[in-house]
Image 1 (cartoon, rainbow, N blue to C red):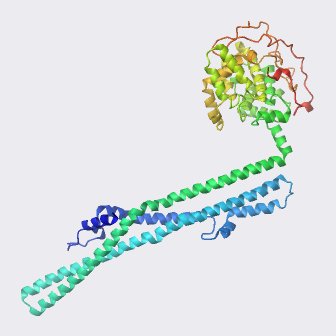
Image 2: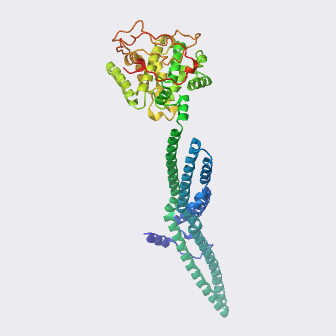
Image 3: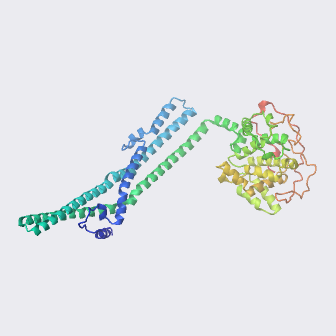
Length: 551
């Protein structure tokens, strides 16, 4: 098929005839080959420029064998430096072990890089160099040869025309010897013209074949650049896999060799630490930031209008979070701050948990609850879902919801209805797992979720039904408000309501009602709590009370 198409294009070419002006090589080519011809020179420049620039990107010695190339790489030099450094450290030193592992990782990365560069040379650089230095220059050289032959042809045709005129003049004057000489010269020039014409046709055929061959090979030439990207992708995947594996091993080894350091870090950094880890490290049932903020809010913030909507200054909030994270008991200055930073510190703690307090696993179950219209089914579903929570999450959610219900009792003053509380606090208690990577996205997704707000509102409105019994909010005894605080707004222990609602009249988010547990407030209030000595602040012994266990 290629031969037939070539012959067809050849037949379309007109044979050169004596023109009035000199012919050019391009005049002998059809339109489609002219377009191909215009791509030859740019293709040569592109192959040459890219191959040179790509070769400059290589870190190893071009053309070297694997071992020699690896030794010359900067990564191997880094690996060698790490190896020399950890030898000077104690064998039990965590720094020494990290350097030793880093040495192995860098050595592995150097070998992967060397393999990548050798593959790059073989599959990309060498073909590009051949294209720019051999294949395309041959075509361009053929073009120059054709142009030279056409120039010679044009010169001979010019001389042939002059000789023909001379021969006609001599024949007209009747000069016998002169006419014979002119005729002989004309014959010689005609033979030369035929010979050059033959060479032009032969070179033109070869040049056309080169152009046509280039057009059929363009896709394979383009594949060199595609191959470059594929090799790079494979290199990065292999490097990432090696790093992930080594990092996992390094972190596991590091955590095992330094339990005291890890424990101290977890104990001090309460924010962003998994709930279970935080509670276990301090021997607590309620997270320290939750208890601290709740106790202080009960003492001084229950009648603050728009409490959870007020934004404290960033510096004050940062200082409070730092005090909580360090276990400090110097919290008196935060009782009277305006606006109080306590709600912000509480929301930050909940939002920075790796997993929401109401858990990722139960997200769909919570959302289903919001869609239930039947009152009894909704309350029962809330109770069932709460019972599926891990014990640590259940205890802390119960503690927090009971406090929020107490806050809602002052809604006439603080304007914080169950609905308003759910709107500002709900996004920090429950969010879908795919939003955890971006806090901004997390907040937007949660706030816009009517289901999340509805569920949290229902929990607050049915706190006594879902979580019967009293709660000692100052469960650890660590926090006692100063005497000049606005104590009296709320007590640290729930007290029986003077006018309990009838057993069949509880409320739900949409105004519906359900029953309260008649025994919810039957226990007597706890005695006054005294402030422990400073040394009591910090990790506490495990505590168990009936107030924070599931019923």
